[in-house]
Image (cartoon, rainbow, N blue to C red; front, side, top):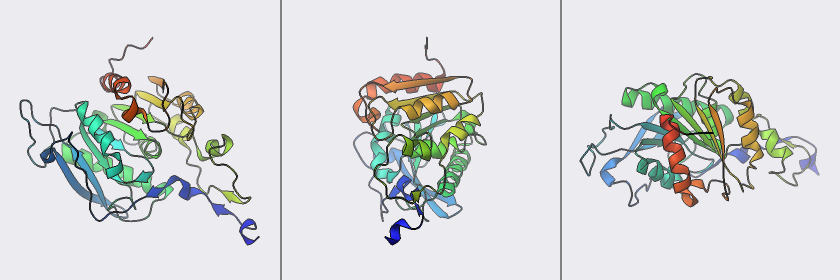
Amino acid sequence: MILLLGCYSLDGFFFSPVAVDAYALGGDVIPADCQELVDFEGDAGSLYGAWGHQPEDGEASCAPGTPNADADVLLFFHGNAENIDHYWTDVEFYWQSGFEVFVFDYRGYGRSAGDPSHDGVIADGAAAIHYVEESTGLESTEMVFVGLSLGGFVSIHNIDKRPPRAFVTEDMFASAQTLLDQGTLLDLPQGWLFVETFDNLAAARKMPPEVPYLVVHGEKDDYIQPENARLVYEAAASDNKYLFLVPGMDHAETITEAPDVFRPWLECWAEQTCAID
C-alpha cells in the first residue's frame, strides 16, 4: 500500500541505456578505416561518438580521422535503447546514402559518462552539434539532422539555437502526456507521473520557420502511435514541412525493413529537391 500513497516518476521510461567497456561497431558495409571512434566533452564528462567517413572520390579507403569535405554531413540522434552499437545498421544506411555520418551516445549510454535525464540529454545533443561543427569547420546550417524516437526529442530541442540545413524525425512522440493519453503506457498504479513533460509539440512550435522538416513515422507503429506524428506536424512552425507515414512499418522499422522506400525521401529532402504534390 505504501507505493500508492506517493508520486513516482515515470521519466526513466524514456531511457534504456546499456553501458559497455568497448564498442563493437564493425560490420561489412563501412570499411574499417572509415570508422572512427571519438570522445568529446559534455557537461557531465566525456561523451563517445563514432564517425562513418566517406572515402575521397576514386578511393576505396579513408584517411584515418579525416572527414570528407565533399560529402554532406549527417548528425544522427539515436533512440532510447542500448548504445551506438545497437544503431550501427542505421549509420550504415545513412553512409550508403552518401553522407559523412556522426552518431553519439548520450550520458549513461555506451561509454559516455553520467546518468541520462531530460535536460542532460538535450545538453549532450548541443555538445555533439558543437563537436561536429568544430571537427568539420561547418555550421549547423550546413548539416542534416536526423532524430529517431528519443533522438527526435534531443534534436528538436536544440534546433532553435542550432538549426540544421534539413531536419528529419522518425517515430518521435509528441509529449509524455500524449503517450499516456493514447495508451502507450497501460495499467499504471495510481500515483505514477512524469516529472518532466518531454514536450516535443512546444519545441516544434519554436522551430525556425526556415528549417525544412520531414516528419517520418511507421504507419503501423503500436509503440508510439502515428497520431504523434500528425500532432507534431501540425504544431511545427516550419514553412516547409511534410508528413510521411511509411506503409506497413512498426516502430523503428523503416530503415531495416523499407530502406528503398525511405532512401529517396532522405536524399531529396536533404537537397530540397523532393517533388511534393
